[in-house]
Length: 626
Image (cartoon, rainbow, N blue to C red; front, side):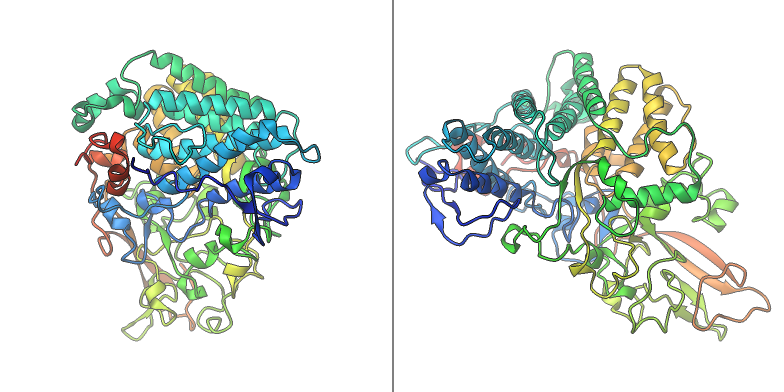
């Protein structure tokens, strides 16, 4: 008998002992038996809380999923990012894989959820809400299965705890079976969590509904309609196990109806942030609204009411222990991604293609062939651009004390500036900077979104931020609803809701129809949900990855020359009255040369997993059969 790696626990579960009633206080001091656990309310609660730890950092990892997409590139070489982006991933050579969706860790989490689901109905305690814990366990099992489904396609469904003498050779279930299983768990969770209180970081009825909405939206999409997918990809068309990838047949319109109705149920049951406007807000307010959304109520800067947007969040709290991968005292996002001129590490830097996809304030497309756009590419853009991207000349926070002398006006410097003596000054945030040049951006942009703009947080951002990761937010459900309505020809409803999002950000109404509306929606989703781990999935499920994820990396080169009769600022500061700025878009292959191969629509099941489970042999994803 072979033992598959996903079932790594022994027959006797042990859990943290001596917990408090506080959420996710899971630091173990000793262990107790499974039998004792389910006789004690606080112990059972601690067990379920521990299952949340498999969320890890959410998306706040040093390497972000954005760097697998046309949102960003990863600055530092040697992290297996290019194994994926260059199309070289294989079952024996995996690319970087976050534990928030890795095969083994997800099945560990599923086994823990199964343990709770198996034991809670017969638990004897009365001092903790048993239905709430059971609802959370169903939600968590559904969530972790959905993570596997959207990366790997159909996976083995395991819904009970295996004993040591059970047969662990488990075949893959079909994509449709996995969707149905996840949806059923979401429905069970929603029923059990009805009328339960909301605690930040814990699943609710609305979170279960939001997960159902996402799963059904994906299920209706091109990649999982095998007639459509086969027409777009010869690799998929010749794959023998198509039912692992989606629906070989059936009523696709009915699937869009299910997706629409699931999203509308979320809209009816929840509330978002400032989605009741009848006209666009001024640009400055639109920017402030989006900053507040990205802070999620976790900053002293911004509108705390924006926390109402969050349906489920991965919260920062001292109750998450280091063993659970969330460092005490704050998250690392600022130091991981901020400018090197602030002693940050420039990890996942925006690429030019993302910058170019932000519309002008009047709703028109940005166009490098327009001289006004090309000469001042950062003027009059969608306010969300200024809340998401740090670019040359952007105002930012006070510099650290040892850098303030170089930049006393606190502006991002990612260009090269005329020194008035026939030479140039290297911007303090470039890779030629005097400050930690190895941490400079290769694209000449930095992420602003999710970095706390509080000016008091400069020197040590890794110990200061309390920004939550948005696992689900209300606007995602709005966009899900818009997409389903477009695909069903219900354009009036789609326009009404997409314009609510745009008004909040200060952008004018969309008036498009037909495929133009579909394309406008896709760009709106790209902008609104940037750096929230949606683009990777959206580009694949829409099957636009060849022309998006696979189109390479472009960066910007900024040169500033002094105008006639002008003398340079010393120290330098951005000043278009004194300098003429030239912006040159360049191909960037400094770390990776991106390509697209259709096998990248799905991730491979590793050789180790296939070797452990004979039922997986010969049934890997297309392009990975070995």
